[in-house]
Length: 181
Image (tube, rainbow, N blue to C red):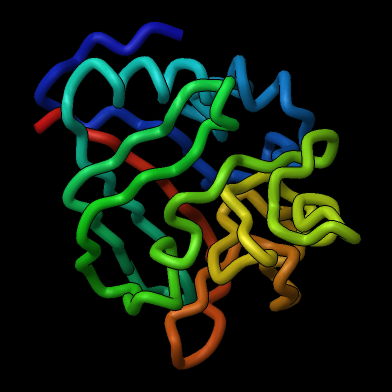
């Protein structure tokens, strides 16, 4: 997938219908899967390519229980595959709740993990398997936007969720968007 828009939001991922399974392997996340306007992941190679060439910011939109919530990061970089697609984030803001130990800030600096490539800090378990997704897991997570679609409905941490500091927010839909600065 080629993304050419330079000054508009480019979607990196979308989860709005539950029509695509996000519990996938490293190669799928590397290359991307699904397709707009349905659910999709752009691909870690493509995200790396975009964020290395120019400065980008990240916005995460989340709908939960009739509320529209968001997180914004002043800059966003995903390193290359050799570095495990390590996540780098700037200053957070938004309505999802932020602190140095919650939200995406907790995952800052982490490598990407999938069910077949365990890059979290636990030696004895794979957070991607435990949380049925793929993400920049640390010692598991406070954010799991690639978790199973149907678990969110049942309020399980294996679903699409965000820890706001006052409890888990279980997402009905999510979008991650990057924009060139």
